[in-house]
Length: 214
Image (cartoon, rainbow, N blue to C red):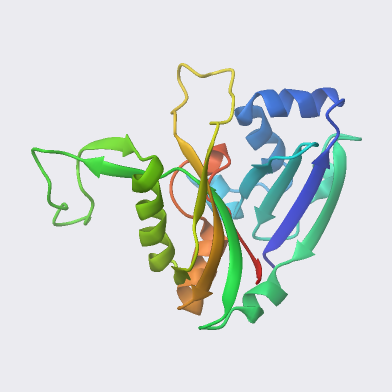
């Protein structure tokens, strides 16, 4: 079953502080919650998506393809609660209005010398450009539509890129948090987007789409 776990982190816990200071460390901790995955893309195979929620206390939202093993967290790391997302997925029907939130990494591949998509992959070759402001909002409108959602309202807020001790070698993304209301247009596309995430930087805490009844 696809599960969502909310972890209220103890900011005084040494391992928790280390994870909050280094997203690579956080990713490794969260991968312990899922069975060992073979293959070239273990995070995607495990269905691991996560997001750090802002607020007076640090909170993690962690989504996995199966029920996570919370005993794999360090002792006293925080307070965790897991729910099955099946009722939410069954609730999604075309025309229904939902509240949404996603922290995403809006990007586009731009190349003046090769502006058309590659004939085989359909992707454009060129430098990855990070989008902000109105360009980021337009990106979300396109991606939401492709994911079976029709945005009714959109608010956006720049979010800091998670910290890492390997900043020189790690990729850098500009993150934006999108909130609002949207109508469901395609249940199949939306279910796929919920389970697999949207956009880049999923290893760094981006791409998790959260929905709730309006």
